Figure 1 (cartoon, helix red, strand yellow):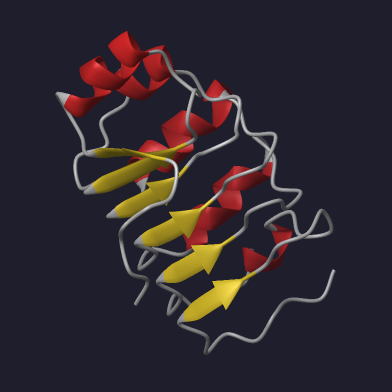
Figure 2 (tube, one colour):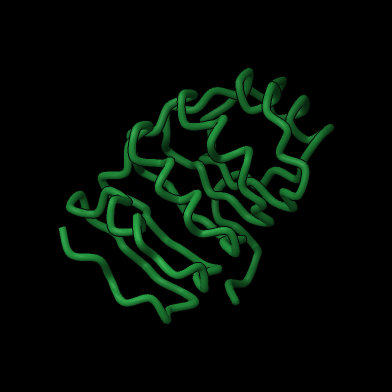
Length: 134
């Protein structure tokens, strides 16, 4: 698979054909990435480890499950959108997302009790985020 150019700082790759494999040989300048509705999987999420400057990440409407969380927790996000994924509140609480300023989830994705538990350790926004992308 050919790799993408490496001078981008912001990039949107939506669509099932994008799995994250293109980041294998990426130069780490990217800080904002939208992979909503993409084909990224629990197995291919590890390719994001090649992007150490990545701080804004949207993974909404993907098939990601709790299996992706250990990799995501190692990265230093300030904003993470996991709306409309199969990730659970229980596993989110078990991960050390120390630099996360805002987590976006979908309305009804978690119970009110789960939202309250998550809000004790991170900022949660249900529905549309009020963060402005850089």
